[in-house]
Amino acid sequence: METAQLKEQLKKQIVEFLNLMQVKPEDIKDDEPLFGEGLGLDSIDSLELIVLLNREYGITIKDPREGRKVFTDVNSMAEYIVQHRTK
Image 1 (cartoon, one colour):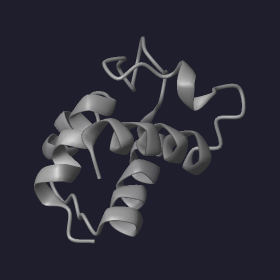
Image 2 (tube, rainbow, N blue to C red; image 1 turned 90 degrees about the vertical axis):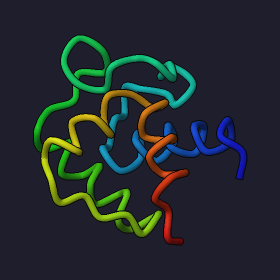
Image 3 (cartoon, rainbow, N blue to C red; image 1 turned 120 degrees about the horizontal axis):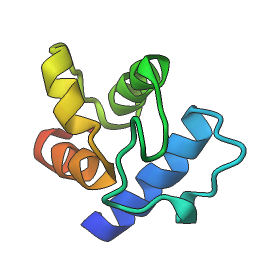
């Protein structure tokens, strides 16, 4: 899968997994921060993203510091998936 396709898929999964009814996948920019000022996700959402990576891509994140880097934005998530995917 190409990186552009992966990013589009990730956006759809983020909206679906986090139940973000008010957000459309196409509204999420690749470099928009997922937490804080950007998409406005919180710590509960980060747990859901960890589950998403594990369930959909076979990736386990054990270190919270690593998770902070991975979940910076869609670009960082896609890059991490490409490097660590097992499924």
